[in-house]
Image (cartoon, rainbow, N blue to C red; front, side, top):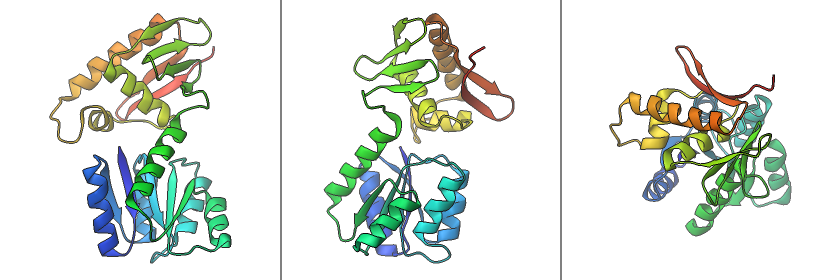
Length: 227
């Protein structure tokens, strides 16, 4: 899981980044508001941890800019301010959660886990897009229209989970390789093609109109073609 940590206090940023990496998060750090906005616009992050007081552009403005562009990446806002008005302003700007400094690291990690679950799961614990859903408990793909279902392999499940979490975005082979096989894995790009093929077959098996479309020269996109 890839996070953007936006914090201008260097010691705090280094300590948080180290903590998160120990928890197996991939962390990019930024200490400037304008650069953080540029990074969040150009990269598919799973969560953004966003300080309020920043040079260049404050956290409220960053969150508002991202939401105006319909970038729905979950935002956890960090600040030394504890007044109710600041909390309300942060949430109204588009933040999903708010944590006041100083905080316990256990609470930070728990809130990140909650944001991850909330961002891609529906109220019944499933992940849905178009005419399909993923059953978390059984790792199965279900088509609502045909009522057909099929068990997915671990990588097939993670591929569809990643597409659903980033619906509306085109994902590159590089992003899929990093997400599914890991940053330190030397998996060749043909592995991505092979597992995409397997996943497409299972979408076809259940009769889904949701498909994984190849966008020439760019990557792949999950689409629902109800025609």
